[in-house]
Amino acid sequence: MNIGIISTRYARALLSHALERGTEDAVYNNTLRLSQSFLEVPELESALLSPAIKRKEKLSLIVTASGSDLSAEFHNFLRLILAKEREALLKSICLIYQDLHNKYHNITICELVTSIPVSHEIEEKIRRIVTYRTRGPVIINKRVDPEIIGGYVFEIGDYRLDSTVRTQLESIKRKLTESEYQ
Image (cartoon, rainbow, N blue to C red):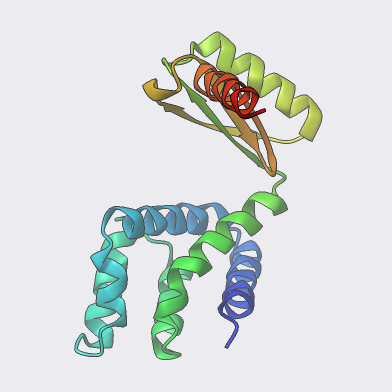
């Protein structure tokens, strides 16, 4: 069984259904919250896989993990997943749905890691540059990591720009070590 193909089929079907109903953003938010719950509570996945827990209890567990404002489409989808005994795929279905939703709406997700919090002005400059290039909305996920010492790491799709002091120091150290052995 190819989990990726099956998860993608379910995610596409969910997106198609949500688009027909005009609730793709609400479903997106539900999948986002559920994905976050999977990250924050690792026991959630093992509970869903447990044969000792009944389907009704699993549904209640997933609904709680998905947030209080669950869309009807996502609720019905969860029932289908449980009826088809595909709860093991739910985590990957949510992630694939989010990716498909973003592609459909031409939303670009970027990650910016800095050693100190970024000012609003810099964030907006980055957003304008990326928006100009992608011609669509941009979401910048910011993270502060003091261990990079200074500089930044910027990721967009498969592109990664690492301009951190830590990386530069490691590069210098590697070059010095190589020159000692030669």
